[in-house]
Each structure stands twice: as C-alpha cells, then as structure tokens.
Image (cartoon, rainbow, N blue to C red):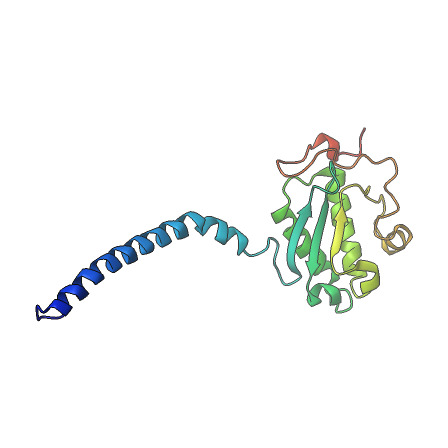
Length: 185
C-alpha cells in the first residue's frame, strides 16, 4: 500500500478492500469444499485392494451375478510366470491372501472352490487365451474332490462342475451366509 494520500492511493485502497474480502471468501469456500470432498477424492484415488507382487488388484462384482458373485484378480507378470518359474505355490498362496483381505467371509466349500480356481489360473497363467486379462473366480462353481492337474484340465478350472451346487446363496457386501457356503444341503 502506498504511503501518500493522494486521490489515486485512496482509490487503490478502496478497490483492494473488496478484492481482499472476495479473495478471503473464495479461499474459505475453497478450503471448506476441499474438506468436504476430501474423503470422496481419497476413495476415488485409493489404491486397489489386494495389491501384491502377484496381483495388481482384486475386485468383486456382486450386481451382475446376484445372489452369487465374481472375484476378479488382475494378475501381474509375476503371477503369469509363476508356474513356469517354479513359484506356482507361492503365487497361489499370496493371491489367496489377497482375495481374503478383500472378500471377507469365504468359508467351507466356497473357500475351497475359490482357492482351487486361483491355483488353476496360476497353473495356466501363461495361456492368456484361457485365463484372459483377469483371473475370474466365480462363487457358483463347486470345489473339486481331487484338485489336480488332470481335473483342472477336465473341468476347465472348475467351470464344468457347477450343476447341483448351490454356491453362496447370498450377495456381498455384508458378509456371506456360512450355512450356504457348505456343500451339505
């Protein structure tokens, strides 16, 4: 601000007053808006669930398949090459932990089915035409009594063992019904 009191300085001070008030109001509104929208922005920018050396993220689709659901793992190159590099078991266990951290309530036959589907996808991870861009694990596939390479091939990673199994019977989120996760009718 100028020290002289000529007409021009007075006009300058008079003009700055409203501008400063407007700036103060805009700053205050900006800060309060940022405070209100902060949690939304943080959610939108949050890291995906289930990120590890073998997974770029785990997502769950409950709307298209209700009352069942599909878990999708975006595999990293480490997951795709795990079986070839002798780390298939390590990748399977890590991906299982990634899924458990994102999808609570996997028990009984449902847990067995999801684990077996992960294992099968890891075994065939290098065959992109078979596994696709994601490892999709569906709740409506019954677990195998004998999960081995022959049965994984015969069932196409459990895709052909669904008949007669009741799957989850419940929708996520909010937990899964443990009784319906049992293969006992």
